[in-house]
Image 1 (cartoon, one colour):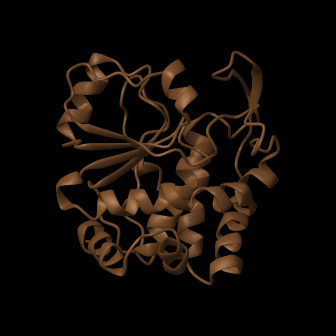
Image 2 (cartoon, helix red, strand yellow):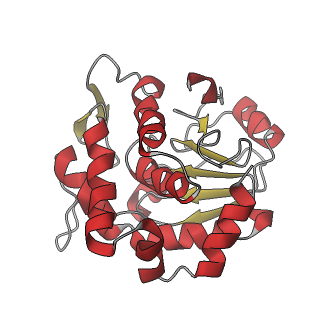
Image 3 (tube, helix red, strand yellow):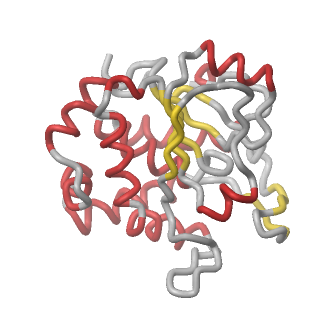
Length: 231
């Protein structure tokens, strides 16, 4: 599955989300943010036929690290997965990964329904889903879409774990400076993390389609996404 990686200069962890279940290649990509995108990277994105960027980051992240375009004319939608900012006093983001993943499932419903709504329009493709590094928020979003296209849990998990390779986390945590200037550790992901998100959805809603319906996605939109993304 490592052949899914595509070299886009200035963008981390860029890869094709297709080739899993019925999700075809060349229509949906996943990555880190475009805030260090180079002109050469933009040329390669244009060659992929990029039309839509679905940005899952918080408003503060967008302000601190805005995506670069270098002349690209794609549409960008801001669809935050998590509450407004990391330090939100009402819904602070969990600091540990084990708590973050079910928390994401709990808070991501409106964002995921909006992703479905956009991808239901065939003119939105090819699309890229990204957050800061394309690991956690992007991981959940892509897992939901792959599941909707009939991918097995094993294949979803294998694709999810590729972020460890894409981000150089296969040898352990790596330090980084976050959007607020604080030094943190980026930690590898494990299979139990994405499983905890999907288990939260199943426990509280019974299925991914029911979860998406609960947050406003229609059956017609789910069918359109299956049609638009399938091989």
